[in-house]
Image 1 (cartoon, rainbow, N blue to C red):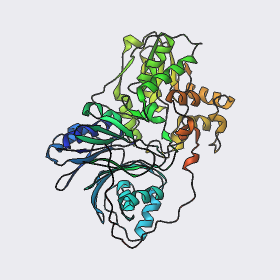
Image 2 (image 1 turned 120 degrees about the vertical axis):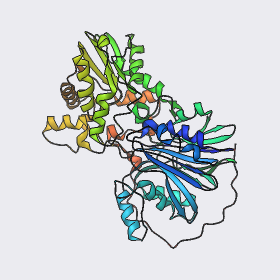
Image 3 (image 1 turned 180 degrees about the horizontal axis):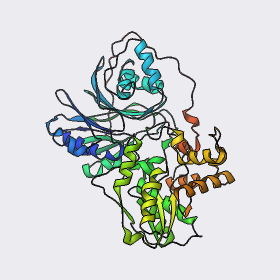
Image 4 (image 1 turned 30 degrees about the vertical axis):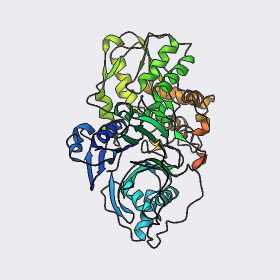
Length: 494
C-alpha cells in the first residue's frame, strides 16, 4: 500500500509537504516522490530501498518552491508522474492496485497512446492512470473515466494550476482525509500526518467523491458514488499507523479492543506475561493485558532506527532479512516464562516461525501462546499490492497439507466452528512450534473496529466482495480530442 499527501498553502508549502509525506513512510519501501507547483513544476523521485525518506529528500525539498504540492511513499511504482496534457500540465500520485492494468495498457497502445515511464511491470501504473484521465472531456470527467475503466482500486491526488484534485476510489478501500489550518489545506492517506503539522481533520472524502483543494478552500467537484463504503479492515489491524483515524475510528483504540476480545477467549491458559510483536502487535498486546490483568512486557524489541516493516518489501529475501534483523530478544524477560504473543496477523508464517518463535525458544521461553488479531488470511488482496499468491499464505499451506491438494472452495476452513477449521489451526500451530494458537474471529474483529461488516472489506479473510462485482466493461474508447469545456466558477466552502 502506498501513502499520499498534498498541501495548498498561502505561502511556500515545501516544508509541510516534506514532513507530511514522511509520515507515510510505514506504507511503502520502494520509492518516494515530491512535486511542487510554483512558477513551474519541480519534481523529485528517489529509491528508498536502501535509505529513509527524510535523508533522501532533506536537501531536495529546500530547493522546491511553490504554494501547492503532492508527495508519495510508493510500494512499487516510481511517482509522481508528470503529464503535459490537453488540460494543461499536471502531476499525479496514486495508491491502490489495478487488476486489469495490462489489459488497459494493451488497449491504449493499440490506439496509439505511448508510455515512457520506467517500471518493472509492463507499465508504470500512475502513468496509466494519467493517460486514462486524459481521455475525458475535462479533468473531473477524466478521473471518473478512469474510475469506470479500472478493476481494483485507485485513490489519487492530481496537482494542477487549479489546485489539488483529490479522488477516493469508488468503493472506499483506501482512505483520504482533508485537513485545515489557518494558512493551508491538506489531503492525506494517514491522518497521523496532521497533528504535528497543525492540521485539524475537516472531512473524510467519501468513496468515489472528487474534490478540489486550492487557495480559496475546498470544492466538491463530484459527489460520492453512493452509500457503499468498503474500507479495508486491515488498515486498523496492521497497515495503518496507530495515531491515524479512518472514518473517525482510531487505529490504536481498535487494536486495544482486538486484544481485549482475544483475552476473553483465553480463560483456560496460565501465563506469566503478555507481549506484542513490535510495532503493530503491541497495541493488541496492551489490550490483551488490560483485559486479562496480566503484565505487559517486552521480550522482543524492535531496532526502530534501522528497520521498517517486513511485510511491505516486494521480495521474500528482503522481508526475511528485515524480520531477522529488526527484532532483538531480551533473554532476561523471556527465560522460564509462559508468554502470550499478540500479532497483527499471520500471513506466510515463515517470519513468525523462523525469526520470532525461534528467538523466544532459544532464550528459554516455557510456553508460547500466539494470538493473531485477525482470522486466517485466505485470499490475496485485490485492492492493494501485498500478498499476491494464494500459495504463500500459511492457511493455504495447511489446507494443502491436510487435503493433499489445493481447494477452490475453502468455506469449511473459513468457518471457525467447523472441524476442518480446527484441524487447520492445529496444523499451523504445530508448524510454528507453539504451545497454542488461537485466531481472532471475524465477528470479534468487526466488533473491535466498530463498523458494520458490509461497510468493511474483509475479502482477504472471507473471499467475499459482492460490491466490487460488475459486468465486463467495453474496451477503452479513444475518441477524437476535444477541447475542455469552459467551466463556471464553483462555490467554495471554508
